[in-house]
Image (cartoon, rainbow, N blue to C red; front, side):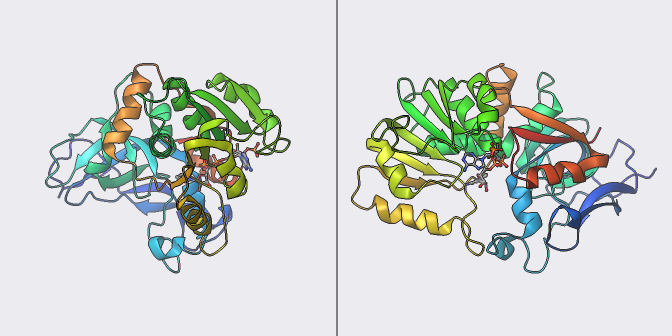
Length: 346
Ligand SMILES: NC(=O)c1ccc[n+]([C@@H]2O[C@H](COP(=O)([O-])OP(=O)(O)OC[C@H]3O[C@@H](n4cnc5c(N)ncnc54)[C@H](OP(=O)(O)O)[C@@H]3O)[C@@H](O)[C@H]2O)c1
């Protein structure tokens, strides 16, 4: 065991190397393998975390595969610039770099990081982090930032705020995944009447989150008798499958349709759908709003506060130990996650 001698503060012995799940090229789950890497050192404004839990997101899969291709412009042209996947991390601060005042060694924290979470240690900007209270366990905390933050922002953009939500009817399309389960739970918590489109196997789970009506997305189409036009104040489209015209007909005048997800084309992903929504919104009282989630420490803090108060409990489908993180990645890559998948490092 060695310590990081150059760090401003380092009271916990930190090993020189660690296990990390790294990829050296874009590809499927097999491209990410367990290896030994040097434990990173926290730079200015950074802290070193001993990782406790890392939740996986479809965003990890997009970066892992480099798909859609536009992803590579931001994350690395030939391979991911950050070689270790994992953005949603709960961990313990084990050393702090220069100019870090918000956190000290021993603090328990959580946040959305630029990557690196599928490892025993990760160095990350302190500004990304929020304190984790003892009452919120690491697995629960790790599940919150990306999916919970995206759900929060989607509801805000669709006008489903805590003040305005009571009595309003919201449809969540793609309600069973990470973002979808948080969207249902937060909308219900805000007092909205929540309808959901999800796979039949997820019906009971989505009802348990507060949806009053759950319809099978393989059986029920927008505009059908079960999902009539003009009945919703807001639609949150996370699956990105139904035609835009059908979505626009679902909302009442003044209603909004938040475009959150969907795979889209292999080059530009959902961009075409977002542009189509913008065009359809011109001169219309039923507008599309794109959601580009930028989760902040403050937003993670809001979610942590709800979890600490017992008002928000992420649906965790399964946890895997870090030694089997490859299986967790393959599971999320298959596209049928129910709620969240979390890798537990120890
Ligand atoms: N805009 C942003 O900032 C932002 C941020 C985060 C994520 N996203 C996007 O949001 C989407 C969801 O992300 P996620 O992490 O929540 O994914 P996820 O957890 O992997 O979602 C998986 C779930 O989606 C369900 N599903 C798949 N196709 C569906 C369809 N046509 N209709 C209804 N449900 C369907 C699956 O149900 P079955 O197993 O029953 O098929 C599964 O439960 C992705 O496209 C992602 O890229 C966008």
